[in-house]
Image (cartoon, rainbow, N blue to C red):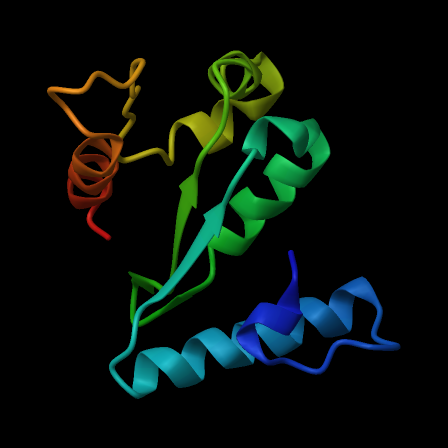
Length: 122
């Protein structure tokens, strides 16, 4: 994950310090009434280990409210990857799943993407 996009200083920190930094950031945003959405494009390229790390981040909560919404965008291989038995805990956390077929002139892609984002609760 690129903590730079969230304007967090991450240089020189190990994985534990990064997790703590991100957790504090999420709690601060929650306390200020803001939702944090992480959009990962080409998510099929993350691989099993990185997807598992995203699942761990999705467990961060305050007052039983999950603090991070994640939208995974990818090619059809992403579905196959998430369907792996090792990623069952991640698959169980998916609230919405949307496949966008090939674009047609009668149905612009942006309408399909907006519909999927709405379905996902973003």
